[in-house]
Image 1 (cartoon, helix red, strand yellow):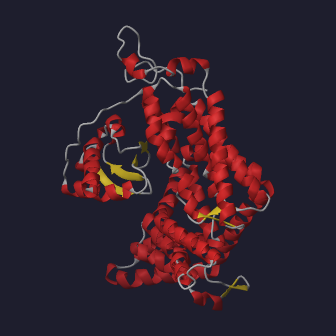
Image 2: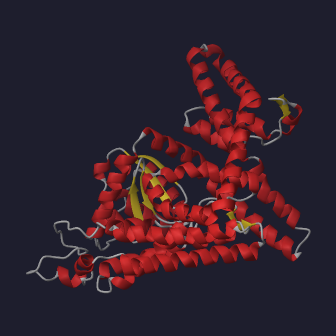
Image 3: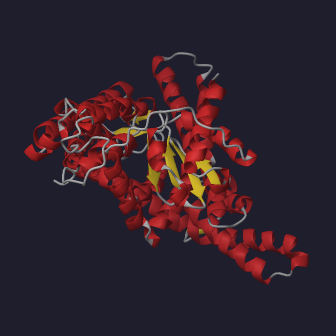
Length: 502
């Protein structure tokens, strides 16, 4: 039954993105089906967003369809099979309820895409492409580590906890190899060569090597060293492919690639990347230890705009470095407060616009995902098109971030053992320096602060009088009144007004 349901979702999506012939690539991350499209003009975006299982779309370097965690991993194989077979099964009939807010959200996303196509932001996307495939393993191992810590604290199953520790730690011990593999793949090299060079970093025998006047240690440089080593290996390999005769390429190119890149890694990159990694950990701890409330205010308040600008991707290697060094990242729980402000904002919009059934229906369908940390439907479908509520959502995130940051400043660190989830989905991954109970209580209270402040800021300051006049109407009833023009938020085409401006 589940397979047929997922096949039906895939079959409903395929014709709305131009059919199998329009698909050039298929991939997925935690929540999104990512498609390469030959012609974006063939996408019927309004009909796509109207599908019950589609939570939103993001028109970026790839065309991204938000399906939610779990579901996307099941729908993607079905979609790939339909594409490969050239099947275009017709979707079941559905009601298309496009409204002005959705149209404004689409326009804002298109504008953001155009602004984000800079070399720096495209580079950040490539870095994100290296680390995103690692997230499922980080989550799985992080949850197992949390369970193991709980069992140890309770003195339960002492014979099992060493095995759980091995399961949880094995991936992190070799994460540099996976980063090297993905880096070479992303930059156009042979993935296994990138992994081979990165493996030097975690090899126990490096303790016998001295560089810059000191002995090396296994893991020195971490994921940053692995990334640099694999990029270097890719360029060395490309140079070899250009100059080495084909007859001996299979012997010479891999040897030269691993040898040259390996020597540079051992006698240069490991030390330099190790110093940078140490600096990142020191800076993050200093920031929250000394300016915790202010740092949390800034980070929590600005994270949603960073997401809109695509700059949040620069934080992924930082999170991974902190997890590798300390066992958890202290930044992610602070940044997760942005989602809490967004949820509080959406509830306030729901309360204020009591007569706008269209917007309230959107909020009701998107709120469960919002509580679990999937914020795109609320951002693109509600707060961002409205304008002022997007700002008040950021205020809620700033308040929650300041709360968590304050406790870090007084010595109660709250961290996450993996990246990816936020909201309630982050609870199983929490860790800290004062015990699980204290960590969970601080994070949960921070979410509550974000909800309350996001709600209050939006309820009292999120709407001008004119916005309420235009938006707080029964859109379905208004759509049926032919003498009067349909107000904003209805399904009738109207001349765009100004509700989205602050």
